[in-house]
Length: 122
Image (cartoon, rainbow, N blue to C red; front, side):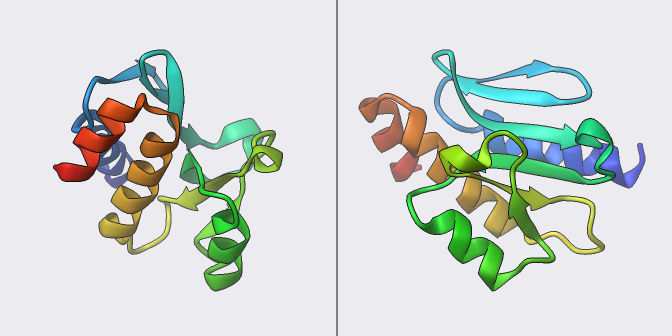
């Protein structure tokens, strides 16, 4: 298994650990809770040469994250206007704590209240 596959598998583990989370797809993955998407795994999406996780961000976080670390975060194609942000998973080092925080924040924004609370306690 190469590094790209290992990172993809690690992201699947992070997302699948959330209550009632499901994974759909193959090359590009969609992570859902009760039919609502909370993250995407993107591999060379529309030929952009990047591998990333794309998540819904709380209001104001998208711009703050990009300003703080533009080499790691970028505006998500098509979804940026809805507050989504992408975090690169193809850089030499990955801060998996940041990945987990981004995924959890996104999950909390789309999951039913009970599940969001359950995820927050885990």
